[in-house]
Length: 138
Length: 138
Length: 138
Length: 138
Image 1 (tube, rainbow over the protein chains, first blue to last red):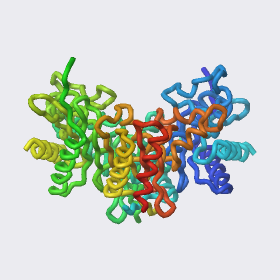
Image 2: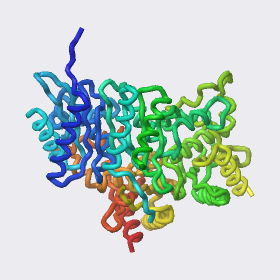
Image 3: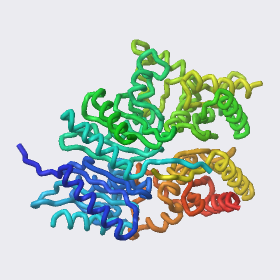
């Protein structure tokens, strides 16, 4: 039998609030998704003005990061033409997101969830996700 | 050009908190989704213990209620065998949910969003959704 | 080699305008779709106030009617529990619509297209579609 | 509560007619789609001779432009190999179109809808979409 550590709703709320604060600090309305260790959604918020396409992209970034246990910007590099993971972005009907902004949440060495951020540039999305995790872990 | 009224994130947060309180009052961990007038997700929470299948069901109940401007329990009746809307539940790839727990949010005569609740019985889901709307409007 | 007769865009416009007039006459804002003999979309309009879910449902009603060469209300009867076509509504990922409001357009004995109407009751949708065809053929 | 501005069917008809005139002027039969601020279809026409694949591409170009508030030809540049948004085209099951011909419709500073044009070269599609918007705004 396995023992799994998993974000609870209170953790997800902390991550979400931190991401929202970071997004507000750079003046971008974002979609923010928090998933558990299995990639299933725990909490989601679309800030007023967040993009409609970013709803699914944020959820799928969080899913990719948690379920593949890898940052989506790492996949961006790894899936470039000529690279071994080239084409992975079309897997799972397109749920594998290879654009920055999805990060696994690691706790005591284990992936316990993921965060996905979308509506800014991939770099903005990634920084907001990272800041949320940094604040959560501290 | 049309002028549309739409729930904002603060409204969605109020509805979500009210639904969560109502769910806690009956001791059922639920998934709760709030969508806008067009059926697009604004906010979502899965309470600790909420069912995995209920993530999508809650989101799709809210979508159905807002985008069809009709309570999902009304569709349950209207789509029974022998009824004119029989079979509507498989439209939109199955996103049309005909199980109770999805309600349109009506403001000054217009549908401004929807709420979807899932994890309890359809009757429990419906009552929690209704209580959230009642508290929101008061 | 086959010779196929097919609605052109002008025909589709005539059908669409007639359906719109019939919908206005009963005071219901509807989604109206016209497809060709192969079930592919030629023209679509969502009247102000037409339902969001009805966009896809209208298109799929027209598709079903043309591509199956059968009225969707006939499928409603034929797909009831115990009937031979029971379950057909889940085929094609749910694109087979068995709710009234989709009619094939028949010209000189051949199906040259289809019309799908959605947002009212199935009976209203069907009558509006029928009135559009009647006006088109006269 | 938010106040949203959204194209109505009359606006969509104006955009569609202008796009059709621009397409006829260059002698290309096109598919033209107009969506609202949330990316949902308002009106569509396939000119006689418009391509079958272009039905969905035009609709999804309009969706992408409105729901991401960005021209699809901008995504074409941003999603090239080595670029940060590389791979975004497979998100949302492939509904994110990164080929030119989709433009947001901006009114008083807000995105109130989108137009998608397909069947010509991406450059032709883009010019037809732009001409429709120019004529609409004037």
